Every structure is written in C-alpha cells, then in structure tokens.
Figure 1 (spheres, rainbow, N blue to C red):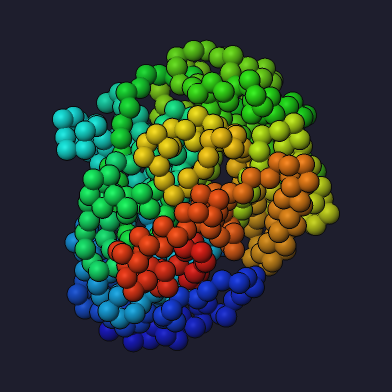
Figure 2: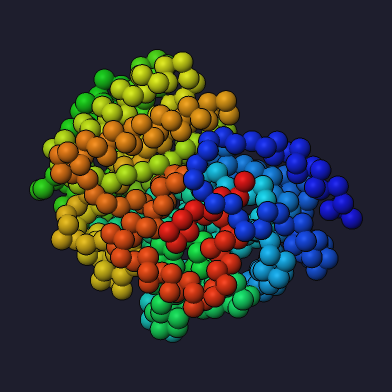
Length: 511
C-alpha cells in the first residue's frame, strides 16, 4: 500500500520549517492519512502519493515557489460527482484538504498543504457557450474551474462574445471567488458580479446549482467568499457582445518613471481617463534595490476600435521602450501578459487601499523604493506595486448586478487597490521579505491616514498572510451575514476549520 511509509516521508519533507511566525490557525485536523487511505481505496487511479509522477506534476503546479508544499496525497477527479464523494470521505475522516484550480494564489498554505489532501481540478477543462433562450435568461459560458483566462478568451474569440474576468491570461478561475478585477469593471462591476450560476459541492457532499433564484443567499456569498462555502466545479459566466478594441502592453524606459506616475495620477483624479468607462489600465512599477533600477509599464485598453483614445493620452504620450498598443482582438491583448506566467520565483502579494488624490502615487512609489533601499540592497529581489483603479461606476455596476459581499459604497468615491508585490529566489530571504512588506504597508497606511486618503478595504485576490480581507467587506458589515450563510450550508463549520484560506474573520494555513 502506497500510504505505508508516508508519515516518515512527510516529516522529512516539511522539516519543521517556519518561514515567519504569524498569528494564524492550523487546520483542526493535524493530518489526513485516514482520508488519503479512504480515497485510495475508492479511487485508486485518481489518488496520488509522493514519489509518483502525477503527484509531482500536481504538487508543483503552483505559480509562487514559496507556496509549493507537500500534500499527504493528491486527489484528481474528473467530475462533480467524484468531488462530492471525496468531500464526504474527507468530512467523515476529519481530514484537512485544499482545492487547487489554476494555482496562482501566492499565499503559502492556501492552494496547497503539508497537512492534508490537495483536490486538483486539473481535468475540469470543459467550456461551452450557452445561447439564449435558456433558463438563466442571458448568453453565458459554462466552464470548469481548471481553465486559465487566456484559454477562455481564445475560445470565445470566434464567437464574438466577451467574458468579464481576469486581466492576466495565466491566472485561473478562483479569481472569481475573490471578487476579481476586470478591464471592463467600470461597465460591469467585479468579475464575480458576472457569474450567473455556480455549481458547488458543499460539506454535505451535495451538488448545488446556485443562482439568483436557487439558493440566493449562497449565490451572494460566493461572489467574493473564497473557499468558505464549498468547492466550485463549474462557473456559468454572462457573455457580452464584443468588437475589436484598442489595447496592448506597453513598457517605458527607466527615465520615464516620473512621467508614468504623473500619467496615472491624472488618470485617477476627477475628470481623468478613468472617468471614461471604456478605458482601463493594469499598471505597475518595479524596482531592483541592489541596482537602484526602476521600471514601469501597463496594459492599456479602450473598449472600442479607436486608436490612441483621449482617455489614455497621458500614457500613449510616454516614449516606449518596448511593446505597443493597437486595435485588435481582446484575446490578442491578454496574450501580451504572458510574461507573468513563468513559475520560477518566490512571490509575495499584499495589498492596501487608498483614495484617489494628488499624493496617492507619490506615497506609494516613494515609500516602496526608499524602504527597499534601506532593507534590501544586498538581497536578490525585485519589488513593485500595481496601483489598480476602482471607479465609482465600477461600484455602481456591482450593486446594479445584485450586489456582493464586498459591498463597497459608490458614494465614498473612487479609490485604488495597491498591490505590493515582491519576487525573490532564496528561501533564506523569506523572513526579510516579510519584514520589508510589513514596514512598507505600515508606513503607507500611516501616511494615507494622516492625509485623509485611507480606504478601509483589503482586496482578497491580492491579500497576504494575516491581512484578513473578508473582515473589511462592507466596511465590516458583511461578515455577520456571511457567517449565517456558512452556518446554513456548512453547519459543522468544516470549511472554516479544515480547509485552509482566508476564513470568515480569521485565517487557516495548510502548513
């Protein structure tokens, strides 16, 4: 039996590593050997253990190398019925497990685990356009959770339809469970607002078709609820007719960083390009502290076949180092994000939120780079930030769609989600990277509060260890309702205690 020598292997593999001490909870079940044994008995051809090729393939299908862990076993089902049967087994054996779809989640211990079972949805690759008339009343894409967004956009390209979803082609479907930013959010809200139905497996092993009419409370909670309510085995996403549009990825030279910062400041301020709902950007700046080198670039999009639209003129005026934008298919634009795909480095994401103001961009850039100079000069790493606009029209569209747990008030004005990202190569630098991140975020938050620019929200898709983003939903008001939904569909709280991730008011890690 393959499980026989697993306990000794696991202890050797995890090596009692503790990268950074954080106030997080361990899953209720310290390990899941009984669950793995039961899965192997029922599904011997779908359950894999250390040393097997399929195990290695699935365990390492994680974007950030610091998030690659060593599950006790990996279960790779083909359909929702097999997922449901597995969940029943894992609940009965009080096992820890974590579902993994695209593997882009960089938080260590959320998409994988050292303590239990990984359920890999690798085979859930189905994609089908459902035209009207249908019972949901809109054309939609029915898709399993194993896709990457580039797969979806290329599949939809010949149909003339567009899905409101991820901005980077290599990111996976779980973006929808954190809300999800889209290039079309000012028109249609969060990406999650455009899911018209979820197929979800609950802790009881039931397979539910969840929409605004069937299980409406659960439908609301899933639109930002992460791994708190069940395992998603299918997404049905509303489709919109689309034409070619202007866009592409642009990269500017190091000496243009100040020009980029000014361009984005003008874009987010009143009357700027962000007030044109067809315009969208995915900007970032990078900084290598060992050399003092800056870089900046962006995906820029205008949802119409218009060359160099006025809304983007401050960006298109900056001389290019590489890349470019033109009128083309949306899938061709997202294909230019392929640089984010390689799975070779250790990555860290953390975020905060800031109101759009005159000082917003300078606070972010100056704090990120100056503290990097103080702390990381001798470290092989890069730091940077993606400053992501959230417009008033975005928040209005989210509410018009039926709402969601994020529940942010358009009257509180536009803001930016500030993703602080770091990339490095050596595990020996993990603690230093965490210390740097804490210092940067603390400084940014103190400065923005002093200037009246702080915005009390943390975006789950970009959040890091201990940030507890769900507690900020609805400025704290959504949590009670989400807990009531959890109690209704998961009465014993299995997904709160045995499934790692951002939980309803806390955090559980799988290592």
